[in-house]
Length: 54
Figure 1 (cartoon, rainbow, N blue to C red):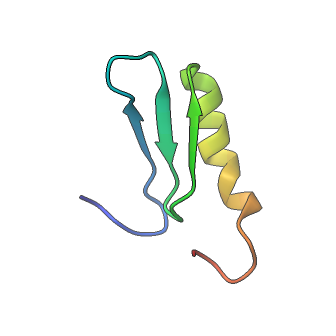
Figure 2: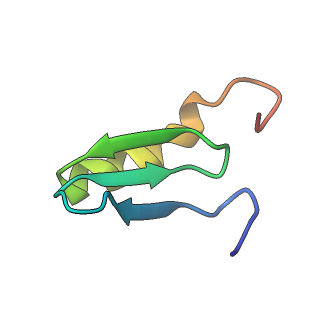
């Protein structure tokens, strides 16, 4: 799998309509709306604590 400070992943939770998004920092978020999921992923780096990834 790819790694680095610009890799985002979205996977489906098995047997549901739920999407799970993973930021490169390890933070995750669940949503059923793919647009909301991408908005969270693309906005999330702005909320990272100073000092970079965990």
